[in-house]
Image (cartoon, rainbow, N blue to C red; front, top):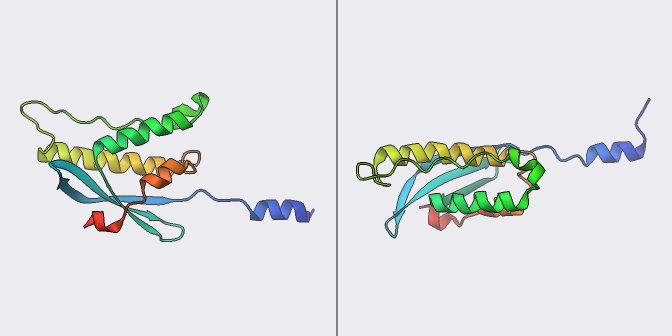
Length: 136
């Protein structure tokens, strides 16, 4: 049986899940705070965004997503990565702490962006839009 025009148009308007690749390309210190630099590529259209954020920015993102997702669906939200052990022996600028956070935040952001239910949250898309001047 051939699809009707109604069914055909519905199938043509289907919006496939976007696929994103995230890469942490380094860090920079701004006002004595570590900022993580990410390149985010939409694999479907090859559009590239540059993200420069502090760990605390990811905490704000996480909290905003939790507010915008129904309680019943909150299990799809990945856990915010542990901030890392910071004490007298390990400062936030310790290379081991920085490396841990780079990889953990990359994985967290990539998981958020590739989740079908979360990627349509406008706040998430705003989060990855950063002026390229800040990326230098």
